[in-house]
Image (cartoon, rainbow, N blue to C red; front, side):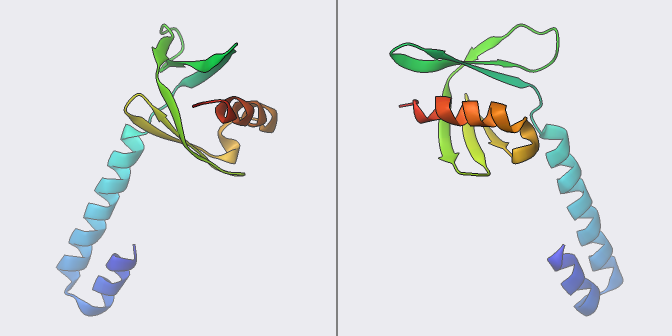
Length: 108
C-alpha cells in the first residue's frame, strides 16, 4: 500500500492504477489460497502427539506430520506437512489454544 501512495505522489496516474490493481490481485490470491479446515492433536503416551487435518466437514481425517516453528503468547506458527499455518488468538477459544500450547511443548 505504501508503494501505491508513493506512486500516487510521484508517478503518472497509469502507473499508480497498475500498482493498485496488482496489489488487489495479490491480496485476493492470498485470501483464496488461505488454508481452511480443522486441526486435531491427540496426545500419546511417550510419543509425539498425533496430528490430523480435515479440510472440509464430511471429509476424512488425514494424519499429518506436525512441527511447531513458533510458540509465543499470542501467536502459534505451525508446519503441517508442507503448509505453513499461523494460529491467532481468535483462531479458537482461549482454553483450546492453552491446551494446544501444552501439547506443542511436548513435540520434539
